[in-house]
Length: 407
Image 1 (cartoon, rainbow, N blue to C red):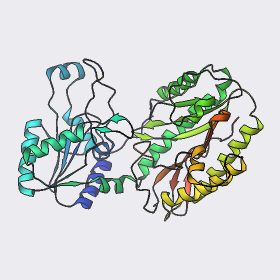
Image 2 (image 1 turned 90 degrees about the vertical axis):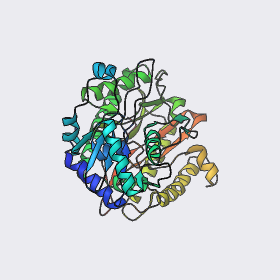
Image 3 (image 1 turned 120 degrees about the vertical axis):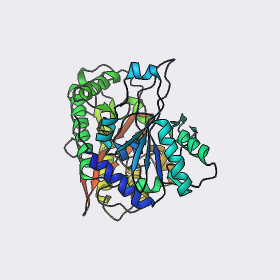
Image 4 (image 1 turned 45 degrees about the vertical axis):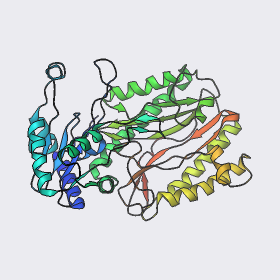
């Protein structure tokens, strides 16, 4: 499954960014390859901002946007790369991106040197730190390498961060972007249905993962992230993805997955019962989460902020936790014991897409609605997640066709 994005989409995105940033040169880097083994790299995933501006899925390329023309700078490549990976086709890059200039590494950086000498300023995307301690992960060096090259030309040149500008553009999805997200949602929904209909026959969490991945491969799409198939106590671990445990009859299993279609992700979660009718307590917790989700969906509309919605949803969640006998008072600490995450995040080129949670929502924004209740001492974890499009009058649930029932 593929949604074809015309070069005009990327050309318009570059012009819209130019209109926001002004007349200084804008330079954006693709991601680079990351070493996996001695002579092998991890599967490549393009920087979302670079793709949004070019549609190019090759590593190491640099985009330069000027008031006169836009051009691409090719990376240096070894004979080994050209032999084993193939050469870069300039005509394909031009056709895909609508960028008419494709320069060699030497030619491109000579032109950047000339431009910076005239402009005396430049705009780019501020790089991440080498290591993000909060997530415990290293970051792609593409952006840092770009800054290093710019500073090698002029170490004192002022660098403007364009993250707010490109976020402003990406948060509002154009019709073709909604089409891609909707296609990803349809394939994801079908995969969950396939798991649901076969759940009683599956032996392990990885058995369910194999059903999902096979369905995605058969539709020529990939997982937007490693599927979360969390049964029993594992359902209380929010991003559990080992998927190794046996599926035990009468346990609940949280299936949190998303297909990626033409770089755009779906993000849907359903909680299912394994091979039997759910207990009264399991139904009670599931019903509470469903009530909170229905309440939260009604809040999604233009003019409100995700931040303010979260406060309302947590208050409503507190009433459900009290009804379930899990807490006695609606304090933040007590709620967090059973509901430790937020309800919504933006969705698009990334499962957790860019967006400002304190700015009023506008038509065209796409976000998730995913409340959950997690009770480790009872081996019960329930999460329901749907994807919604903000409209002129409220919201449209893009994943509404997929049942939210346990059975």
